[in-house]
Amino acid sequence: MSKPSQQKTTKDQNGVSVIQTQAHTSGLQQVPQLVPVSPGGGGKAMAPSKSKKSADKESDEYRQRRERNNLAVKKSRMRSKQKAQDTQERVNELKEENERLESKIKLLGKELSVLKDLFLEHAHNLADNVQPQSNDGSTTGQNNKNNNTGQ
Amino acid sequence: MSKPSQQKTTKDQNGVSVIQTQAHTSGLQQVPQLVPVSPGGGGKAMAPSKSKKSADKESDEYRQRRERNNLAVKKSRMRSKQKAQDTQERVNELKEENERLESKIKLLGKELSVLKDLFLEHAHNLADNVQPQSNDGSTTGQNNKNNNTGQ
DNA sequence: ATAAATTGCGCAATTG
DNA sequence: GCAATTGCGCAATTTA
Image 1: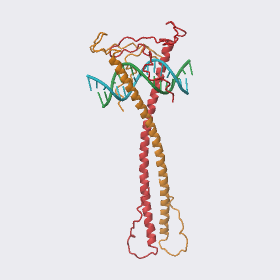
Image 2: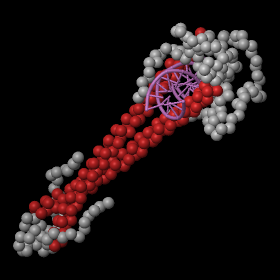
Image 3: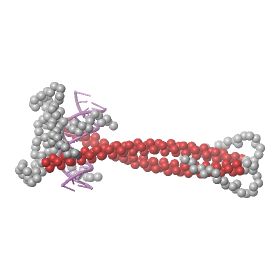
Image 4: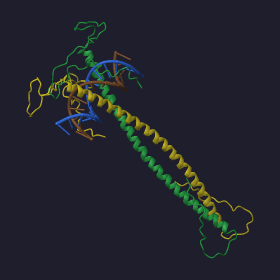
């Protein structure tokens, strides 16, 4: 998404950036104050006055644009962060759901197992009692042929 | 993941940076005006010379530290991004797994249903044939009492 | 006390 | 033209 353009790791593509902000803790320091101007090429040497519409710096226009952008940046970042958080939450939710589902599966498996056993038992009963009667009260011997551990 | 520490959302903990910015949204705007240094503390006014080891700027030390930090920052951000991506992937995986589990549940449910039906049928057969024999070849009437739609 | 890691922020180049 | 993104560097903090 969006090429990183060609911005090498050129250390300081910045050129200027610093305006005069800075100050800070360490006791502020001087002002960098530099005017970028174009580097080598055929720089147009526009007078420091207002060439055109004062697109230089300090321009009201400029300042305003910067501010707008800063705002947009902040917003964008906030959204980004939020999204990441949401994603994380989604992971947790899904994990929980997964556990629930697995529990359910286990349960169903057990139920199935029980029913199957019961079933087999009866089947055998029938087989054994092809001809009913007698055999006193034994609960019909339990046999164990198939352990039925499906899955 | 790392506490957000105590950084209020104070907007500009920066110190200065504000040039004249602010304003915005609602429209009001007031002049920021820098903060008057430390309140009660002992304001040490060290001359701009070399307060110790030239930790000012341009210092080799400074430059080196900056570079190191820049590197660290880059690394950190990369990791962060990667993590986010991984999280997203995890979401996808979990979603898939979820679907699989649900399928399995559905299947097991069906199996159970079948077995239960079969079971009931037999039970009824037995009940009807409390006294075996005769009754020719009818498959023992099928009754339908319980529809067994568990859960 | 120190170096590395994080985090908020502003700038500028791109994108859409 | 403008808002949204994105890479980058700075400085303040937090961790280790």
